[in-house]
Image (cartoon, rainbow, N blue to C red; front, side):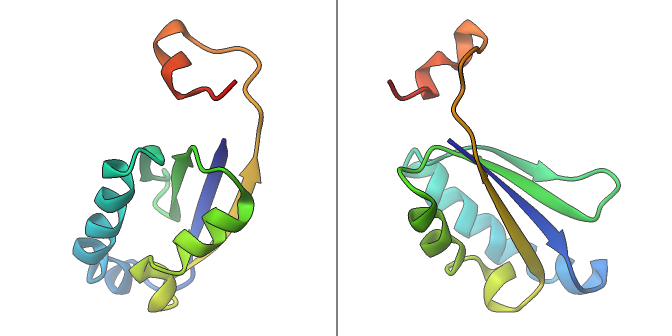
Amino acid sequence: MFIVSLTYKVSIENVECHIPEHNIFLQKYYDSGLFIASGRKEPRTGGIIVCNASSKNEIEHIITEDPFHIHQVADYDITEFIPTKCNENFKIFIKD
């Protein structure tokens, strides 16, 4: 499982003009089952995507499709983690 932390590197006005395209990108990966949750940081300096990809390389490839990446709106930090404990409702996302 991975946490992708986005940090905006342009003004929020520049970010907002790319949000519709970014939401289409997100939905593609929700539909595929790879994205579990996403949202903006507070304060609004970027966002977080929680995903269930098979490798860091897969995430790096997926990021290249994000309009925020294409238009150089955000930097990305990818953290892999192995869940060892979770709420029962979350277990559907855990790969054994």
